[in-house]
Length: 275
Image (cartoon, rainbow, N blue to C red; front, side, top):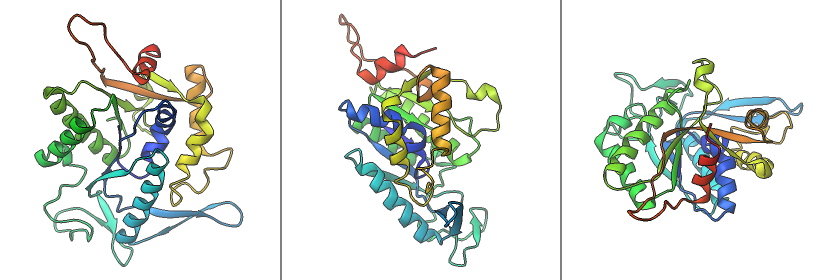
């Protein structure tokens, strides 16, 4: 299971791992925490430069959800949208509206729906994700780190973490890992990691999956594409071509009294690569 805040977060941060283990026969649970109502549409001009334009929130949300559906379909699954509002949106005049006191309710939600910033403290929101975890029983859950420049990433990490431990109390025994944010202002200490997955054979495939989010990643085929460079940099650190690094929140436990532990190939690689 991967839980991302925004369309393209999953492919950017854990797409190589998911693709590798999809090929190993794993089923993918693809979860979006926000309603993806905010953002801009990027495209390339005749000279190959990225040009961005704005859209009203209703159009933006529909576009990004279509792209999530296209990406999830590559893993024979469907995107699950928790639909918690982002912290801002654009109205019909393309004016940026922040969700503050007195702000109008976004046209894509209702007044009693918590934003992703506070969803982790909302009992109904947490219980909804607990139910999904218990139903899916994923071997591991991947989500954002708490050391992140984006508050919606942090809000997602908080929601997933709170739901994870409630699921654990009810018998779930999978693992929880945070991916390492590629862009953080918290210094090198927060670039440290504990384990990684080597996805070298599917590096190009990961770039294709990122490219499913056309309005965000029109330059995905460029050899100097930022996410390709990041993949190669992490590969150098981990001793392979391309790697995705992670931090454990909690390791999976699959043991029965009197029997040796049984782990899937994903968990075995994560254990083998611990540092």
